[in-house]
Image 1 (spheres, rainbow, N blue to C red):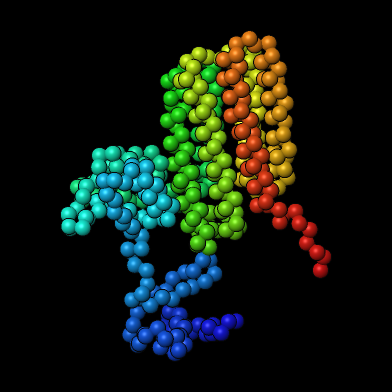
Image 2 (spheres, rainbow, N blue to C red):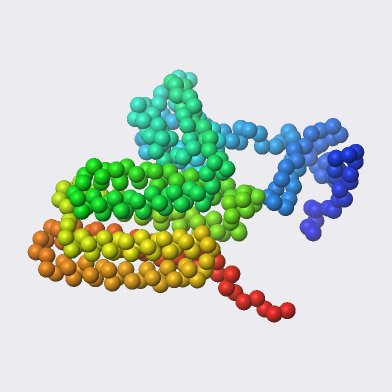
Length: 354
């Protein structure tokens, strides 16, 4: 026990109240007196905290206000907004900066569009509750009960995989509209990623929430964050493949496309195996996924062999770019598997006999 800790017995009084005394020195040092109020709350799953009511964190700790001027670029304003979202503020105010003469500026149309797009497209659970010349107020309304981290991750993964399937279909059919749909879907994947990152930040600082989310320790949150980034990259590669359709406006068909499809299906299957290991917290399953990912080279070679007889150099160039994107997906699957290995290594450690 440290020098600033003391032991106290819990007393029972009346029919339903427990009381505990406070050391006199603590009360004196904090300038408290009889009749002062204190705030009592849970600290994680096994602790309590007592804070003088006059100094406790009030609701304004959930409110953030930033000021911007007309010279702030739209992208800079959006970055600030995303950062405040990650910091778990529930209310975010964006106001025009007041100049040295006491005159308030204004939020430019470009800045306003950027803020609205960010709230709509990338910040899950957010809503603009006020929008006037005085500024914009954003409320974060979603909570953990409505969408769990596991639930958000599964939806994010399904969406990213669907994007990859649609990207290849767009390549095969030369479907520009479908390619554009894939590109637009990337915003939805990012929304899930931002939301999960925000929830992980909450879990790291709150032991009770950590256990509620199913994590063993805060280290697992870090691993989960890296996995989320890899799923975001999967979606990014689907976008790159889709842009090929818009750039060249010509489909890729025949046996060469079939080989690309086989390669992509294999890469996605490794992603599935690695994520299954994550959900099951299965070390051996993760190891299988990591080893399996190496076989992507065999599928890549099959595509390369088909290119040898193709005289269309432009198409060959396109195919090499597509294959590179597909191979990276398998590499991300391997990365996910290795993270799951690290998260579950303790389960295979043999404990010494007592």
